Length: 335
Ligand code: KG4
Ligand code: ZN
Image (tube, rainbow, N blue to C red; front, top):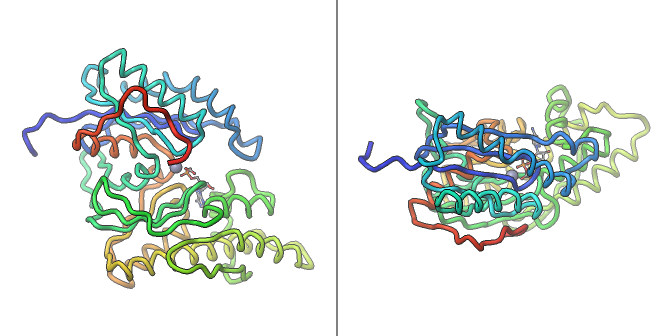
């Protein structure tokens, strides 16, 4: 332990359809509260206007609950970290405006956080009284969510180099769009995962892209998925379709991740983002680690989907660097 004062960060995340707040003491998570928005499932996707309205309803009770669960008052908070983007602008505005209001009212400095960097740094969030290994720098992170698919070379908590990205759909989108074709509810990723457990992953062959370098493409898979199912003489077993789809997406992701790890001579590999909850991908990453002596970092399920703990840890590292945000900083949908 050092003799420095412990830094307390209040973090706010509102980039998509979950309103979330967390409190960290240093790198240790004291509380994390997530208000999920059920309203969107009936529309088959996130409706931006409904999302921002729900954020407005949820933000005060969510922040309040996070402070109470951490058993801490606002006067002990050293900085407020908020998600500046990327995400839905209306949703980001709610969290950003709330953070600014609180900052003015209580004279607490602000820290802006890039949502994607938050996903990556979620690997550094510690839980109270629990020893946890962190990735060593430099490490590679496969960031897979509903909106992004990237391989990021992380050389420090503030240095992120995107070395591969999708040229069309994100991995989560591929799961969700294919799931929709076979009548699964939105978001389809978790349903595909569940059904895949009792299916045959070799039942169907879907097209894999041939993209040079470390970039990804998923639009061809979607077309091949549709085409294959249309040609079938009878209704296929959903479990087999899901298992084959999950295997294909996992293979596409692992191919490039392993290629990048070899190219850069990296031993530590991590995954992050909503699709990092997928059991096929988690197993494949763990197996790759065992086969080739790599250290692998697979997040706990609660840190895969959007949460404020990851915004808090990113905010903590920025606090240490003295990187504060001005009050007139606008949220941004793309970063
Ligand atoms: O990171 P996230 O919560 O939100 C974004 O920032 O996009 O990711 C949501 C995505 C959705 O596409 C969802 O279908 C996918 O993550 N997802 C999964 C699983 N759990 C969530 N995809 C496959 N298998 C899962 N178990
Ligand atoms: Zn996310």
